[in-house]
Length: 354
Image 1 (tube, helix red, strand yellow):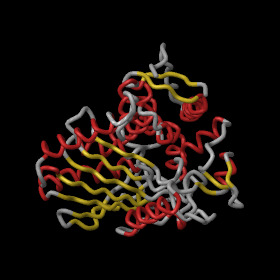
Image 2 (cartoon, rainbow, N blue to C red):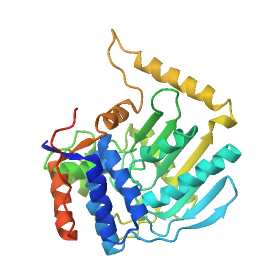
Image 3 (tube, rainbow, N blue to C red):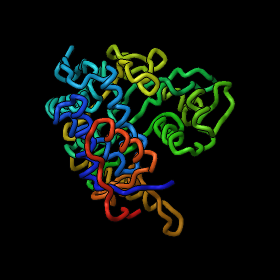
């Protein structure tokens, strides 16, 4: 796959300008741009700038509200329900994480359900900020309809991402950030854009026959990870992300990938646990760090074993100044720049290390 290198700072500037060009306030545009570029830095390209043209199209056509007025519908002090008014998911999650961090520190635990939102980017972007405050963070969300239940063909579930982060005395939290489908839907979109196939075991076509063709996969359905067990996890995550508010289930939703004007009414659920309220922050962070090291030391004859999150954080560190994008993503961004009459992101002089 052909890659092109860019300055991370210039990509953030470009993405923010693109969002501002369609009416997003500067602070919200900067936040959203940072989340997308950070995903690309960490190699989570399915949640990176690949999605910027989609966000812009959804704002232009009414699927995302660029200037929302979020409202707290319920607030018990440790649990709250936020109506995001069709906001960018990043804007909704900023409010949710701010609430969770403040109230978990006061009460030991806090949970926020969000309704009427949209895609919030990579979950690790949000759980990182909470882990840095000594909080265990659990985050999930509904999405558009893309996944068939185990044994089924119809798109009943979304990819229903799950992110869990535990703070650590090591150099980064212990973090899992994953779709509950075998492969992320954004990776299927990327494969379609690149004209490449997807791995076996990711999807079935409209007749339920396994396929490696991303176009056939989009007409058919992705499948859950882990067979019936992954299907059960996906169902439960969808249930709690949607039903604690009025977020829509995936099968009730028209995805903005197919109709940018669709108000998806995405639901999120964020849970925060303050480690200080239990055995203490230092105690928890030391124990988590020891677990990370034990995982890394578990290979045969010095073979490398990664603890959850190691690969993403290592990539993020290597790509702190420059990040490589697929040629298909570069093409989409250049087309967006021309459409919005803004300057293209400038390519970096050197390729980032890999």
